Image 1 (cartoon, helix red, strand yellow):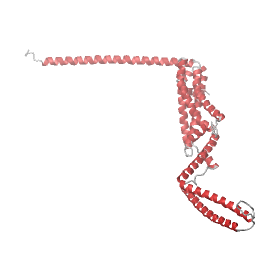
Image 2: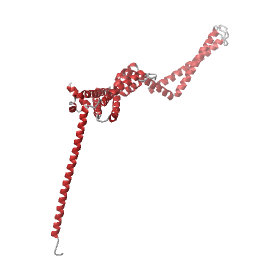
Image 3: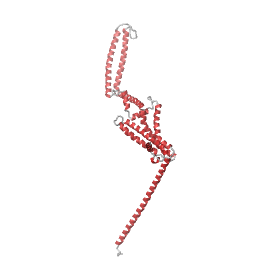
Length: 374
């Protein structure tokens, strides 16, 4: 238990030899250190999970996830440890708040980052369903776009084919009406266009001949339509329209399982809305609550350090800092005085040396001087 406490003291960034002297402070820093440790642990899990989806499908995906998760967790742990340990409890309340403000903002950003991958795992089933809908709609839109582009490309052929179909429908309708009139004439049904006399008379023969002629035209027209449709189908096959089909359930499941981090992150954001575009307040609240929970958990060590009263450990560390600062200043003064004395000695030595040089030069000049000429 003592080793575990010392480990959490290390996590809190406390000076362990000083903290050991004040038992009343030890539980506080154990709690702060444990919070920092578990924040780093959650960061490692979320970072590893995110990296696993980045390299999902690769044989080394698990190794990449473990390595990145460890590095990411260690980075967050070290940052949290620095954030908490750098808050100076000897300062005034306003100054402490001023010191803590950028650290709280940084903690909020860290909380948002580490919460996202965990949210992706919590809403994994809902994300997959939303991805399936998205992939299916995307494939349907792609097929519609290809069909429109194909129709624009072969606009003349489609126009001719539509006219032929309209003519075919008109011929079939006319033939059907003429056959009804022919039956009325044969069976003696009196209408505005029939004689009302039962039997196969001249009118009936003429009407039947017209119908046969129009049927020949219809057969010829259908043959032309079949040729046009065959041409269009070949063009569709050449342009790849037949290969684009709506995904099956098995294909959608496979695509959702292989979805990357970006697609899953987008789908998580879309869970706040229903498929029809209306807001889904329940899911939006759940996602927001989980994010806020991790943000609060990340900010908790800073809040604990701010809310805790200044204890004997804080006084001891503050006094120790003042002593070290005083010693540092004295060391500086010492080095300044030594440097000054060395400088004075060097100046005196150099001055004496140059004086002797000047004197020696003067003596030599006197010895060389010709006094007789004077």
